[in-house]
Length: 327
Image 1: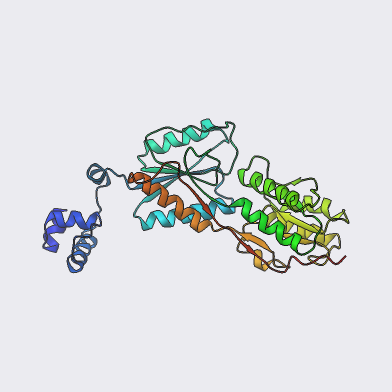
Image 2 (image 1 turned 90 degrees about the vertical axis):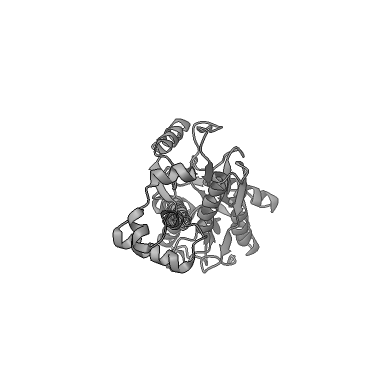
């Protein structure tokens, strides 16, 4: 720091203010200090900074499955928002869907000196009430916290109502549902909203078919649906399963949307480029991730209710895979 100060012709205090991104430094001086830092290869001492600021400059993120589209998009948004706030991100995968595994992951991150932790929890754990170690701010993304912790989620029920309502509004007498796995919060909320929407509309409620989020599981469900002539509309719990359903219908000679309308959920980048562009519910994962970081930073600053809840509105995107029934 002394070398940077000497080269830039400023005090060590000014170098510290620039290193900590304080605003009480004029632009010309800041540029001179930054140039000296770059030339000398100066990097702030994060341990020393933590002693001064009370922050380590790192956020922790835990997820069960970062390969899932929604989790990956949420994590990317969290990383972007954290970087803009000048925080690093440490990621840790939870090995099992248990409260013990989650608590262990929290302890591991706390040992690594994080300022707060975001849990991307779309899975149903083995315990109805998750109690986490105290002493670090926590935000959940896509999880059921029982209002114990801050939480950010897309309004799954609203998205489902819009998708199922769209199909009923086209004139379909009922809507079949290919649900996600039984151990998923998101899948459960979508299935419950599907059932409630049909009941409220006075429509019959067919039996549920379950998949595992994959196109292959949607294909297997689609084979069963294709064999039922009464099926004219299908709501799949995600776009990959919708793709599998559409493939099975095509192989059975049932046209989409002429014979069967199909909707999905997520609006993955490929959804508009399916052989029949898919009507689906768009989830704004970027906003979810940014809200997670915002709520966490509020807690770190001591400015927020630790049980604050945020809901992000989805959007129905109508494409070519849905139409009025032909008979």
